[in-house]
Length: 286
Image 1 (cartoon, one colour):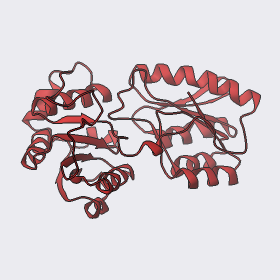
Image 2 (cartoon, rainbow, N blue to C red; image 1 turned 180 degrees about the vertical axis):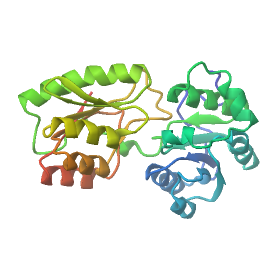
Image 3 (cartoon, rainbow, N blue to C red; image 1 turned 180 degrees about the horizontal axis):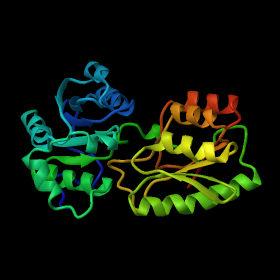
């Protein structure tokens, strides 16, 4: 991918990115865009958000300097907002419900021109193509965790309960399956028990994958969520949080295994507290 002038190493903010400069934030759903905005402003940056109707939390407006709302697929409008605000660097943060792809999304001409170049509509392919379009306009996409390094999952077992021998075997087994699933850019999560695959994540998302696999396991399911091989750290990082372990508790799953240093972990303290109260292990491995 061609680097924008002065952007430096991909995913990093150059030294010239000074306080008071405009930072673009392309916001999806969930808590992550709010955390990014608050962290950036705490460092003296002004945040220009482009939010997606039906996805982005409206409370984001209180955490940014300006916000514009667009419909999914309006790439031309997104670029126009960023350029009007003289944005040179942008962060992608938050999720977009994949099912909305089949819910009347009408891409504009700029988005259509990108889509026609793609052989397969995989997440990474789409996001990299969008990043290419932005860089053509002199806007560099930087790492989503640039201002929140502490939000990444640390290495080790975060709970007092540690994986049993059989659970460790399931983690190793599930890890290989999840990495292959990621290599194909289908999903990032698998549910296993006794070295048997019970559910693979596709368009439905992690929570529904956990529920489906957990119900088949009946109890003691192991949930593995990893980054894709050669993961682009600028976007689409695997994310877990309090709701993840609450979903696991509903089906009596016992282990959540994630990739240290490459997984976003939201509300970590509350997540670990809930997991310990519900006999769930949270294990982060490299």
